[in-house]
Image 1: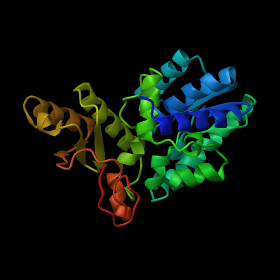
Image 2: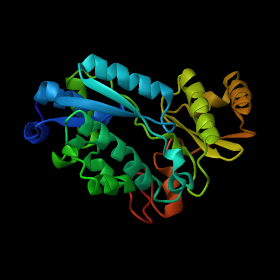
Image 3: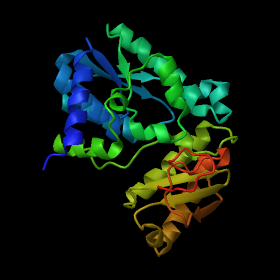
Image 4: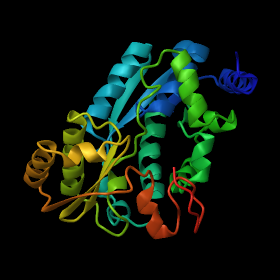
Length: 285
């Protein structure tokens, strides 16, 4: 049976997109931007393009996956180099890190879009993002980026449902966040710290742990895993393999967080409960 509310939101999104002469999607290859790109391709045809930032904040595997997704969708795709670490404001890792990053990256995306003659740029934010601590949304609004998924009223559960109907391979992909989100506010973001996080998470994924975060606390790696995978990591030989690999990466100590994978857990230091964005709240996702 069709969900009438979801049908209405899908129609609203189509109406929003049809009003554009052309559109560039800031494309990470995640659930939301892939759905937006694929849907825009259906509506706008060749008048849609994708731009992906080749940044030290994003794992190499995700940039390669984004390129493959854009190719499979038949969309023009441009990969542009960005280096947020050049900005002292960003590297200092203050609470406005995401604001600084978004302005830096999206200015580059806007320039790339103008270079191919398209003057509307959209990002894949959805209404669920409005309930979390997302200073990057303010930067996107200030730069005039479009947020059609928010305008249509879509949340990520609905985006996954529509993605599944469209047979997009990302419909059940775990949520993504940049590697800098693994480093606590106030701790400097360095190429070495980003490398350590990327290699550690790649190792865990190679062990079949899809939902994971490796939080970088200096010499300590704090592993968050979801889906009941924590107990599996404590059993041999997995435990010894993780210790050996993480120490080779550069961590002196390895800890498993008994709370499990908690998106936005580092925002607690700002007084925000994970995922809710409400100061002093207790709700967890």
